[in-house]
Image 1 (cartoon, rainbow, N blue to C red):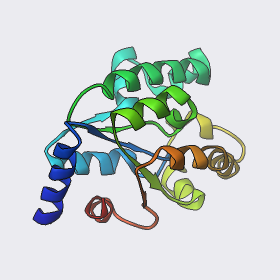
Image 2 (image 1 turned 135 degrees about the horizontal axis):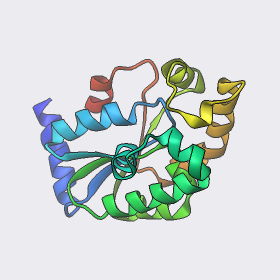
Image 3 (image 1 turned 90 degrees about the vertical axis):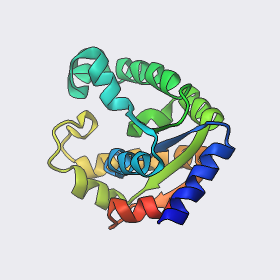
Length: 178
């Protein structure tokens, strides 16, 4: 483990204080893995959804209710722009951050991008009881997850420096692989 951690430190140091950005679909484990990775690297952890909630004082479903997805995405892009300009961070983005070209450009240009992948079946298992996911507030959430994956997968992959599966894996195993 210490070899892996020192290797990751060297990678981060070599990249002129660049940060590490984690993205992927909802339920892939971005926040959980991001926190553990930041701890292992002794970096600051940031979560774009948490930052948006902190700034607005309301949860994500409330933002969607009053501003729609477009309003939320504007807030998200502003937070991503700010957080990606900070050094030595591990930043977990929301699953839909991949949709805006400026988010993809900012992440790719300002740090090391890790795409966490898991199947839509795994996503469904992990998110089925979570009421804080406005895009899944639908008759058939599994079908919605399939649609989102089809639309977003190529975008995640085109921007990622590294792709890691979280399918049927614990966070420690994923962090070790990273």
